[in-house]
Image 1 (tube, rainbow, N blue to C red):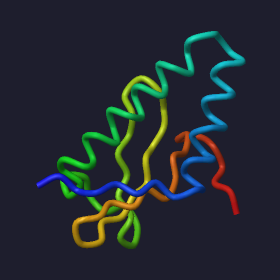
Image 2 (tube, rainbow, N blue to C red; image 1 turned 90 degrees about the vertical axis):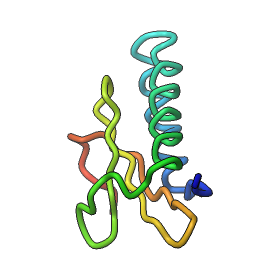
Image 3 (cartoon, rainbow, N blue to C red; image 1 turned 30 degrees about the vertical axis):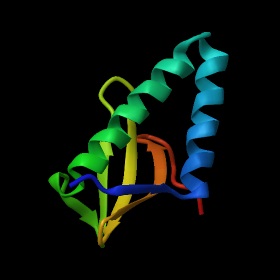
Length: 93
């Protein structure tokens, strides 16, 4: 069963900020990050329960090349993505 994916506005903002930062570092790098995050999102929709709960009901799936974690919860057949954060970045308040 493939789950429905809902990316919350905060997570979209996280991704946009990361893409902008990588674009400033080297042209084309932001596209590579976007592809990696897209692969993670596809993986999560296919098998979201594969990744263990880290805190409360939040699970995290990490990208391989880039150090980002996709933070999500599962409610029924829907996966909610709450944040896409760099592993060494301080969380927003």
